[in-house]
Amino acid sequence: MTETKEVPPIVSLKTARLGDKVTLHCGAEKESRNILWYKQSIGYVPQKLALIVGGYSEIIPPFDSSFTAAEPDMDLNIRSVSKEDEANYFCQEHYSKDWSGLFLSVKDPNDQRFVSQTVVQQPVSASAQLGDPVALQCSITSQRTDPITSAEPSVYWFRSGPSHPAAIYMNGNRSGECQNSSGPQSAPQSCVYTLPKNNVDSSDAGTYYCALAACGEVVFGNGTKLDIRGRYILLPTSSLLWKVFN
Image 1 (cartoon, rainbow, N blue to C red):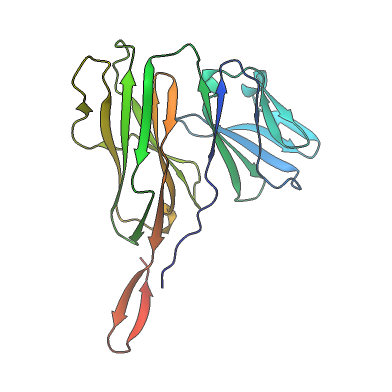
Image 2 (cartoon, rainbow, N blue to C red):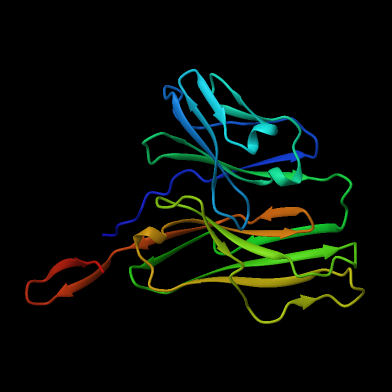
């Protein structure tokens, strides 16, 4: 027998172009009339964005200059989306542990500094016993068209799971050297990044997403679902299987 944590729905991805009018949909139960909205930019802690209670809505400054509340659906509107609006957005029913979230990716159609960016995570699922070490990996390949943009891209790990659904891990570790194709500076480059986790417990269960942020673009991997199992030992005196938790 094994015990696994139920993994909630993943944070969805929404794409918009600079200047678009964007609606952020809240996935909370429509019967609820008490909703909190949060914004979490990459690398920053969440900020309270809006409060919707009954027929009353309030957009928290400084977001009131660009956001409006769309009642009765508890959604948010962005009048003219900008790169500063690229972030995770979460809505939560007041006094509830349930969250609904999305990542808003904002594209600049005039920015062609990258021909392609790909993020691949293998395997798509993994399992570990309580207390085990785990190393999650993603392979990133990018090809530049602008040699001036030579800084190393930022890599982030997002976790969608039962506890702290918006957890973000910075960069992780790069494994070895990046592999460059022979040719000019604009040739494709491949790197492998690792997120190590030691002594895992049940709160580490969830789906982990590797994300590449470079030159105004954010590209997500396909995700790796991590299940955490209980540790078992067999007691010979009784021939019974006992579950041992840390």
